[in-house]
Image (cartoon, rainbow, N blue to C red; front, side, top):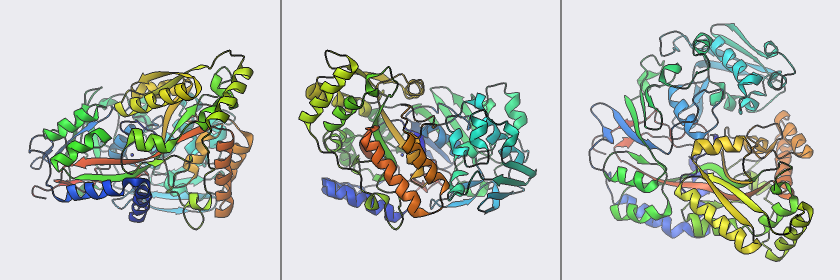
Length: 567
């Protein structure tokens, strides 16, 4: 998911082998005993909730809590994990992920990928929620809309593999030059800008979702703003959206694969970033899942003998810098000073204290595949040796270059959650104690934090990035100079050239060498400070079965979920 992620604690693996690798690494960090205890506690227990509102088997209703409401449900503009999760339930693209996290037919019943392009044949029974058919024209319109410069889509770059897409998005070619053609209602023809090895993964991403042109234009700029401003073609449709208070999804009877969908209602009447409040809702039988648990909640979970589950959500977390020339953080020596006193292992083991989190070493997480094995085994991350004395010398040089008589004061932008707050206070104390730098913590609700990052209104920011597709490029291109999600505006010509090479080559050795060089450049330029790769622990009512967790795609996925009265 891709996307910017709310830091609620501190989003499943693509295969069982990945999960074993992740947990094996976690065990080496000293979590093995805790894993055994958690598994033992889970094995002893039943559902852990009373039969109240969390699950209604008779009506097929599931009640949930979210950390925040979706900031943006216009698929041409959505960037965050919450919006992508909701879009994954109410919309469907050409392809989708199944219960085994494999790509399967969505609106497209079959497809053909060639070196120069692709053809998709749409199913005849795909329908919008008003009963009209989903057509190839709907995909063509949506992709044109996302690329239009006036849309200012932060995810327009994910459409750049389409012929002339980047030139259209940057205003150097007109929209009708796009290499996408609706041959008729059921055949979509796509031309590639250059050969690529991962297009099937891309079309499952929300920016590639269809939008019906007549409905979009009829909304007069409000498409995606409210229930009545959306038209749905996915397993569910939204029937209630009280902003900041309540979401309700109901089974879409016009969905072509409706027999697969066994839940009738997903009700979300609670929004809170407070994990203790969410835990109390679970304890009172009001919600079926607590998706984020902090270390302080684990004692209660063990005491109640609830089923506790865990997974690595594929995301990486790091400190992002603002590279604007007017900011102190644009100075390399200052960034280097911060890097040389930051210990991700201390952050993971002393502050986060949750099983499965790995100390951050790279923008590229451990689960990514390389040529013959895992990328990080083939291209180890550069080692950072902590050195407070060297850090203070870099700080002295930074102050000299910046014309300062004392260390600068820096604003650290974070979410308004307990986990994010603890991490921010850790950095505040660390940089104050080691370097005498005053860190001012700027706590914002998730939606506002996104806005401030997009406006470059920060010095430092805690930043999470989850994968949009299962390839190192989904991480590597984040720091390309043209990427709107590169909120700090890092720019390096060699880095950009390396990303272009990885985008265009079909040779796995050339591509992985390019990613290896990107990893080195990010370290050399101190473009970020890795913090951790996120592991999550959560609890779920045992009566709820079939929930799919994944690193790539909407997470959690309830489209295959079902209720059993006596688990």
